[in-house]
Length: 181
Image 1 (cartoon, rainbow, N blue to C red):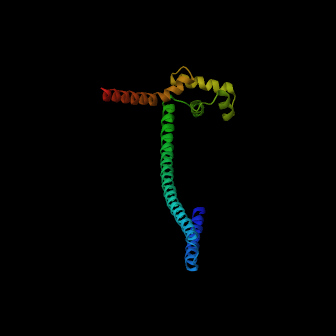
Image 2: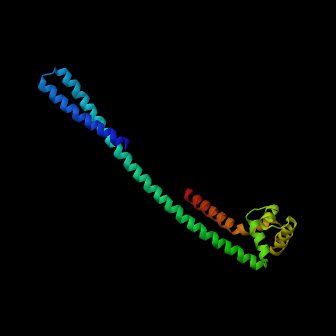
Image 3: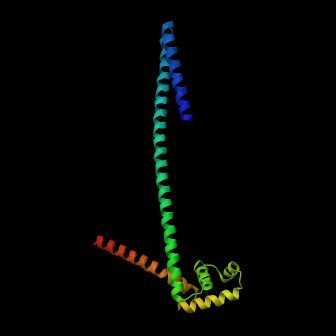
């Protein structure tokens, strides 16, 4: 907006300068004065043209950035939808595994909180039970899952993801070494 005002003012100055130069010529003003005013007119025209070009260029850049931002927002929305869906599928798979191990509803709640990384004290506060109760439930959970503790329990659910990632890394390294050869 500011640029448009400046361009408008320069256009107005150009018009007044043209009128002044034609008046000076008719009045017989010395040539050096007319040349000076003509030079100012040319510089004003150049400035107005530069500002106009710059305004158009920046306007196009802003439109392109707005379009890229809109596309990025759409991708984020799509990713958020995919993440929600993946989260639901993963939670369902974890729940199914808990049922396979024969966890009670109470044990399932504690197990989910363990997977989320809460301490025994935090789980006890969330579930409004004693920390000793949570520890006993955790021991039962580890026994039913045939693991030796919290880390192994959490790792049990991450192992498949890590193996796939390691296989992807190995495949990429093999492809890179093949290209280099």
